[in-house]
Image (cartoon, rainbow, N blue to C red; front, side):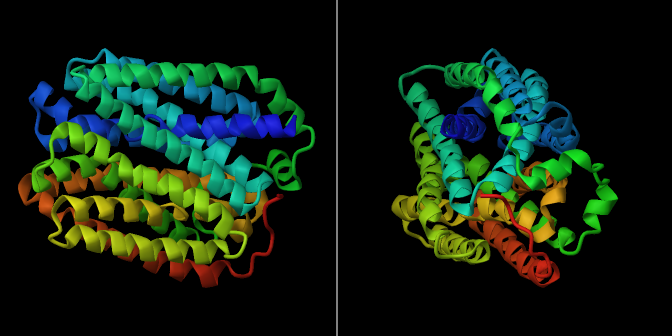
Amino acid sequence: MFQLLLGIIYLAFISLGLPDALLGAAWPSIYQEFSVPVSYSGGIFMIVAAGTIFSSLQSDRLTRRFGTGLVTACSVLMTAVALFGFSISHSYLVMCIWAIPYGLGAGSVDASLNNYVALHYASRHMSWLHCMWGIGASVGPYVMGYVLSCGRSWNMGYRVIGALQIVLTAVLFFSLPLWKRRSSAQSSGEATQRQSAAPGLRQIVAFPGAREVLIAFFCYCALEQTMSLWASSYLVLNRGVSAQQAASFASLFFAGITVGRFLSGFLTMRLSDTQMIRLGEVLIFIGVAALMLPLKTAGALTGLALVGLGCAPIYPCIIHSTPEHFGAEQSQAMIGVQMASAYVGTCLMPPAFGFIANHVSIALFPFFLLLTLALMAFMYEKMLPKVSHMQSGPVS
């Protein structure tokens, strides 16, 4: 039964990734159809991010009351409904409305499921499970690119992904008895979470090292989502790639994340979470440097793939180390606030670059990424001495 539940969690992580890169892949077609400026995709992202910020802050309370399984299933169902809403949208305003339930569904499942894995599995499992997210994120833009290359509308791409989400939702609801059985043998950290009162936001931010890790996570997700949203547009507007090719090429970034997380699972057997994060930062730097070089399409695609490889270990290793750094009894609350901070980055930074692209030049894309990376690395290193006294870790 335990192995079957693990398989269900793998499917849940795939479902998390499927819709994440769709907007970026489809936007070169959408903004022309809606006759809006290219920077307007940032508005949709801001609405999604606002919903995820709210729901991730509520994740500790929801998970304590309903359990991880039910929260996950209901959240995926909400995102599936929102995707079908996108598929019938024929105006920018309607897409903005459907972005609300999509954001609300994404936040709770992300925080609660990540905490569950951090408490119950070793770092290698976190990397491999996030590899499943990468598979979903890679499939999304590939499906969109294929649909567009067949002469169909971007609406059909959303419809296909929405149908896949419905299937995964059904699997998650059928699996609810497995989550209940697993809860009877839950780890001591999770049991403590259920018995103790949920800490407030001020208490969480006051934890030693909390501010630093929140800023680092803010920067990481800002970098990742800026890549997701603007990579296709950068290739079209600055490298002369067609919209159809760019939608497919953007999947290289997520393919890099997917392959990198698969390899990271093995590397974590020899390297600590901190070492893995530092390795990822170096790879991102090399990838961004490749984007800066005048190597035309081949250099740009190589850069996207390398940035994806560098991003691979950072997210899962920061999450997995949360019980170790801040205590297992507070990990759900801390991860919820980390997710909220990450989504603030998602909300603010891609639109900020959209403003730069619209009013200055989209050619500044790699420089924007480099500045974000530098701040992330600085804050993470500043956090480490402050959390070194914590010794508790996840149950594996």
